[in-house]
Length: 143
Image (tube, rainbow, N blue to C red; front, top):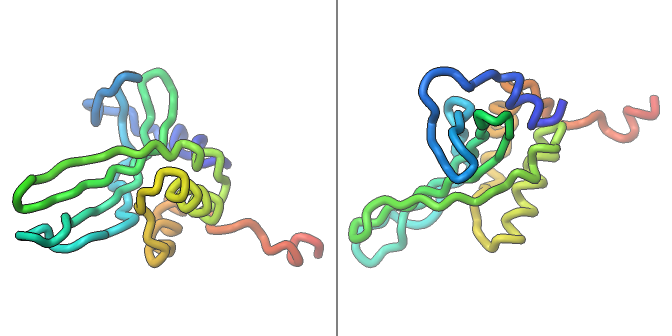
């Protein structure tokens, strides 16, 4: 099953919408996983504190999007969010394919938003949606 199909199967479009954008109302898979912590403590001259979360959105129209929400905080500027569309990962059928897609999108956008040390947590979260960790090893498939 593709990640896009898993989002639809989760049937999260209940209750109030999580948000509205130029595409319309959307709902988000609960408890979006933390996929990166970056920067400093955000105090004084130190760099902003940044966290990135993977949001899987299901729109009223039936459309599905994958978005990384990067939340930055600094004492002088407060909190702000940036959203990076990573919908290319929706065709992934395994956690390994989803993670590869996130890493490739980082290179395209020049934004760091996936910490490979969080692979196990993301794999477990995706498993809860029915996405397996990886395909069988090539030599195992031949048996």
